[in-house]
Structures are given as structure tokens and as C-alpha cells.
Length: 319
Image (cartoon, rainbow, N blue to C red; front, side):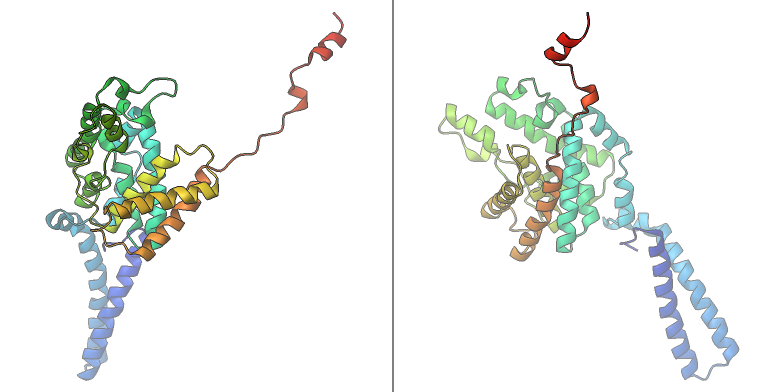
């Protein structure tokens, strides 16, 4: 029942239990030379039991999830509804973060499918991983107007770090208020791990060569599941791809390889259980998604009938 995403999955579960029940009943009754009337009655009860078992499991599933901290795919499907209030707020108040989360969701889902991880959990975690930015959306690059200057230009690097770090604690608080499941809640701090905010750290070094690197790192923890590790990689790849001047397939491949190598070198993936083979599959899953996002459109041909008139055309026209 934990991996039910479609209505036909209920029928499959019902059929599986019915076949198991009938096999056991027939084996038991026929071995004891039970009359056929009794065998038919027992088989009927076995079939009815399968229907009742699936129905009871569906009713008790929310209670079991709450008691044991589990997350079923049914719950994740409910959370993936983009009309939920929290995601609607993100769309209206922080549109850049909303778009970033959607792209990261596509990247994470593709990578999770390639590695056998829970792709639905990876996508839903991506939708909610940056909800804390709703507290101060204007302090994050993706939400800044193109023509305006960054608010961080007026702040000291140490203050900027506090502002950026706060989106993790704010996100955890919002997630708890919304009663998000533990698996989704874990993605909020783990997708940053203990990475350093390199931009603010190097900016601080320009003013103080004795600045401590630890002061510019996220608090963690590092990713402890494949899904949160994939989310970390997807988040880093999507953010870095925005700075590509010419996002050609070769440059996208180089960027993805560099980001993955950096996370491995920094030890961010030491606790998640991903293998080198799975990292290679993640890289190959990211590249076509990013290539599709940054594909170049051919310019539409101009309609000559609507072309602006040249000076020579204007001179030939009668006054």
C-alpha cells in the first residue's frame, strides 16, 4: 500500500491478496478432503477478505503514517498538487524561487528514476525545499528584478550569510506548521548539507583575511538518503546553469560534471549511500533535462506584408 499511485494499483493489491488467499485455502481444504461446498464457501470468504484488507489498509494508512513517521506515495501525490496554499504563495510571492523549484523537481525526478530511488519523493521534496525563502524573497537572486541592484550590496558578508541561512530555519518552521511528512521535511536542511556560501566567504576575505570558513557554511546535516542527495545535486546544477552564457550541450555536460565532482570532493555525499555508478547515471539524467530547458529557438521569419516601410518606399508613395 505504500507505493500506490494509480487507481489500478488498488485492483492489483486486491488481486494479489485474493490469489494468495485462494491458493492457501485450496491447499488446506483439498489436503483434508473437504467437501466442495465448504471449499466454495471458504474461497468466497478468502476473496471477500482481500477486498476488506485493502479497504482497511486504505483507511488506516494515514494513522499508520502519523504514528510511525512513514510517507506513502498517496501522501506525496497530495503534496504534489500545485494548488496547495504553500505552493500558491510561492508562485505569487517568490516567482523566481517557484520556477527554480519546478526545474529542480524535474531534474531530481529524472535522476531518481535513473538510480532506482523514489522519484515522487525527490520531486515533491524539490517543490518544498526552498519554502523558507517566502520570509524574505527579495534577498534571493532568482527573485530580484533584472534592472535592480542586489540588496546584499548594502550588507556585510556576515549579515548576508545570516539572512541566507535563515531560509532553512524558516522553511523547517513552515513545514512543521503545514504538517509536512518527515521525509519531505528532512530535505530542507539536507539539500544544502554543510556547504560553504562561497560568494560571501570570498567577499569577506577581501576585507578580512582571517575570516573563518566555518562561519560561512550551512549547519547541515549532510544528505542521509539518496533522494536528498539527488536534490542537493539538482539544486546546485540548476543554480549554476543560470550563469552559463552559452548553454551548449558540451558546456552543460562540463558544468554538471564539475558540480558533481565538487560535492564528492567536499564529502557532502558520504552519508547518502550513492555509488559512483549511480552518480554517473545521475549526471547522464541531468544533461538532457537541462539541454531541453536551454534549447535555442530559431527566429520566426518576418512577414513581409507587416514589414516596416523603408525610406525608399515612403518616397515613392504620393503625398
